[in-house]
Length: 201
Length: 201
DNA sequence: TAAACTAAATGAACATCGTTCATAATACCA
DNA sequence: TGGTATTATGAACGATGTTCATTTAGTTTA
Image (cartoon, rainbow over all chains, first blue to last red; front, side, top):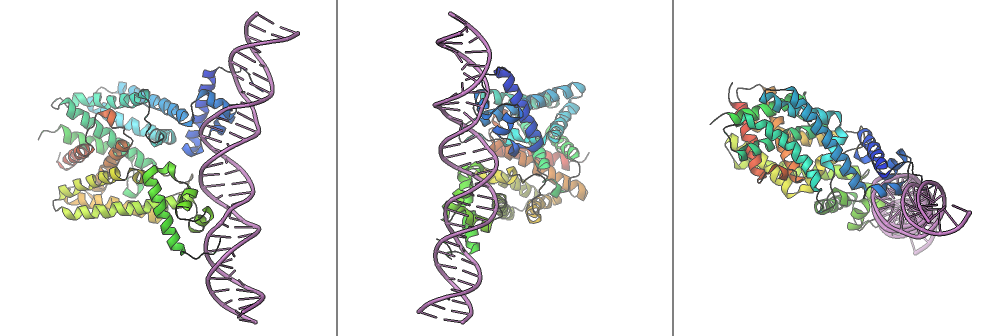
């Protein structure tokens, strides 16, 4: 069987991405294989390589999609709050919630390593930057007395902090620290940092 | 060739761990394979399985060794400072420095995932807990007005934060945030959080 | 010393992996 | 209807983790 013309290249691409995301969600990165994805969409391995450069490329595109979803969700939640401080805290909670709901897909974004020396493409880095800018923009109205440079650093610190909580929570390493509520911990991190950052002196 | 008696089981174990650590340091987790380790110590694959349950077991023992080294280094640096605040900040910087010097081995500790449902053994979790306790103990003299529970949470927040900076720095994702000095960022995170945490009201 | 026993190390075997590409099969066009 | 262009295949390659019957050599016994 060849030359079926059942689906366009783009359709196959979408089907493969959807199937791969399902596998990742359910079994994690280790469960993914080219043959499994191919079987799930009713094609063979070779076909996948007509649509993706290789598995790294496939994973990069899954990650792009996940980043888009996370960003959309953050925007939605942002619209729900007017108070600047609440908006910022909400960003952290949304980040945590998303990671909690989709641990495998969220992990894949930061776990996946390209071959030695290879960098993620520009469009991918922009998606990460776009998310970071959301934090920066939310922080601005709270830190009128700080320089743009200081605000950038504070935003980076906040993002890093929340990110670290996510990682340790997912790998269940916060258990040993006696943490019972990840959301409480996130709130503590952000509010105390902001208190210290905003308070003069 | 069989029954050489060149080395004891323990010697083979140590040789294999050393060889595996070298591979990890140089090529990262992806570069590791049972056959490579075996070849490096002059034995064959089968022999490795007389000494380790499987590759997960090997990696777990590498991680244990890395955690020991990190803990030792933290203790050393702790002894260098008397001022409580300086001691705490030093812990963060040591954590970052170690991750910077041994990125692949440091990453492996938190990247490595056991098969679905399987937990790391107790002795491993204790090594993580021991490191966390160092943070908690250093924080205590600075937070006399807080409950033990609050101190525990603050220690978890600080550790998570520094950990997040490490991860994002290693995966070069802080570049998009315009961070030029990781150590400065760490200092900002810790000192501002502590300021907010300690300051009454 | 020779034979028997025991422990150590091997390496072929199996299933799976990512990736490639000559080949086959179909759709399209003249 | 015949020829051409495109699409999908699946066998093949080298590498992976893991197992285990077999071989080898040290140790003990007769």
